[in-house]
Amino acid sequence: MRTQVAVIGAGPAGLLLSYLLHQAGVDAVVLEARDREYVRQRVRAGVCEQPTVELLTEIGLGDRLAREGLPHEGFSLRFDGADHRIALTELTGRAITVYGQQEIVKDLVDAHEERGLPLHFEVSGVSLSDVDTERPVVRYRDASGTLQTLECEAIAGCDGFHGVARPSIPDGVLSVFEREYPFAWLGVLAQTPPSHEELIYTHHERGFALHSMRSPEITRLYLQVDPAEDLAAWSDDRIWSELAQRLAVDGEFTLREGPILDKGITPMRSFVAEPMRHGRLFLAGDAAHIVPPTGAKGMNLAVADVRVLSRALVALLKGDASLAESYSDTCLRRVWRAEHFSWFMTTMLHTDPHADPFARRLQLSQLRYTATSRAAATSLAENYVGLPFGG
Ligand code: FAD
Ligand code: DHB
Image (cartoon, rainbow, N blue to C red):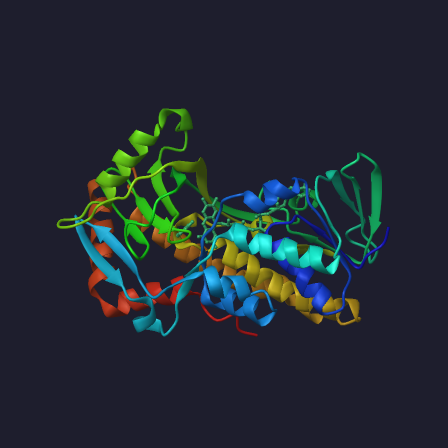
């Protein structure tokens, strides 16, 4: 089999890249390890930056997003038992949209299927070779177990943090920068209307908590837990009681409880591999970098990467390598801004079990400054709504 671009992974990065390439007249084949239902149902991110919404709308994938997405012009920052609003739109003129990552993935899978674009689920044993030549090759077993060989002109490694693309790059090529955090998130999806019209990010001595949503009927909530925490230790009752304690403020706030539809624990890390390219293998999204989720940046960064990559690949396949040469540097500027912002939000909002009293006071001072200074809140808001793509 032959194609122009082999795309490994059908997350937001791989599916959007394939779609952008097809729109530009470039052939691509997407190879995904999981089955179709798993990919469509996986509960992950919820916040779309304004540039992400604008891009999806521009390419004709914004209809359902416009109908079902929830535009938000601010969010609550809670600490010391008080609520402070970060007025995103008043401060920046921009907004975010709450629309589940799995809804974007569904829209992209549907767009592929309606147009008959090649998207293969349940592939296994993906291996990459000849990536430093102009004719790289991807070998894999298809869903029926048959060995397949895909010859191409470029490979896009969009296979997430645990994929095969990054580890196929020879030792010594990549520099890795990383941080682990002494906490994780327990995320729950609950069948209950949101308890507040906006997102709530709470710093509490018992640990961070986040109130988010997916629709007027579905709430998404997160609790800071120990990275070694056993999910089995968290009964639904314990989850609701902990959330109620952490989200409480002086005055009126009632947490609406309901049946829990999904729960899971996610570790938190910061990670960047540089450069994001080796020969004709290009890394995009979580395959190249991870941010802790507190700044809601991971999926948005994946979208930003593939927007740059699609243009670079279109030019490369026409014989102009300049955008491919600058791909990594262009993306890494945005990646490092998001790495800093995600680290900043994470360290400002979580309760570090190892923090000394000096660090605790610095943290509280930062929270108070962010809540009371228009300049500090504007800086946070500008990063949160998403800096323009540029270029
Ligand atoms: P992925 O979504 O991980 O997709 C990679 C795909 O590759 C997967 O489908 C995988 O099955 C496939 N794959 C892996 N290995 C192979 C292989 N060997 N062969 C073939 N296929 C393979 N981001 C935000 O922007 N906003 C948020 O609000 C937000 N909240 C989050 C909350 C949580 C709890 C979590 C866990 C993440 C959150 N994120 C958020 C991050 C966001 O979900 C990720 O950054 C995003 O999924 C990255 O997309 P991707 O396409 O790069 O990778
Ligand atoms: C959601 C996830 C995040 O990481 C975040 O910062 C805000 C909202 C969510 O899943 O809704």
